[in-house]
Image (cartoon, rainbow, N blue to C red; front, side, top):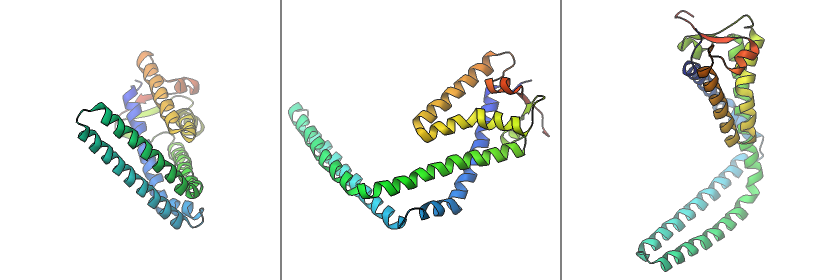
Length: 223
């Protein structure tokens, strides 16, 4: 019998979390140092960047507290409340302008570092997940825990790669590199399509199952 949506989704979640944990550990052990070394004088730049950012948010907090205090003192007087808001907006504009000037010399190198960190996690996730899935021919830990497996005449390392990586994750990961919000939207859309197809089709198959002529079926212990 073919597996339902939630068994499939939860098995995928376990595998994804396992791979993310491995990538994160590699980042802490080695990746972070390598990426920081790509930026000249990273420690000094990042220290100054954090100092400026911390000072900005501290000042922003003070402005917010002053605005809230002024609103409370206004005691419902709309004129005073509007004056307090206008003062807050004007002071925040000055603060934002000064922050932009102060942080500008550090934006390019620090933004480059953050971007390379994103690339590290994205590429690391795809590479490690691909190796993990293909080497095990789809018999991953998540599937073993939920007692499901890939089944069909076309199950082989290449078809598993397309089923579990290309058609399931690759497009989502690529959109995350463009925008995290777009990536999340695409992920939710693919989950919705999978849910509808698995719930409403007699064979409980997704589009990738049909394209590759395989299915995800329930199995017993010892798999």
